[in-house]
Image (cartoon, rainbow, N blue to C red):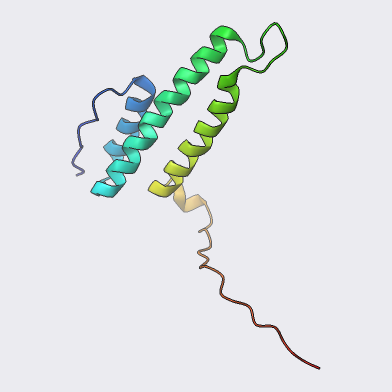
Length: 114
């Protein structure tokens, strides 16, 4: 049985939903809880930005892209990276092939065959 850690204060529905989904199924270490908190707060920010874009439209009447469009793209990348860093499995892991674990590439030596 996993012990559920209380959600941080100030999370909006999107962040709380993410927190509850991950924290309810997995027992997390303190560094993972910090990653999850950052991911939940980023999910909240993405939801706020999306609400702004939905309200104002992605493009102004003058034809300029809404500034939130670029920001939401960056925040979605951040959220994806935080979730990957958490290493939480997604879906049916038995049906998926095991990902390859690759180390950092070493230094290549030039072959001085003359």
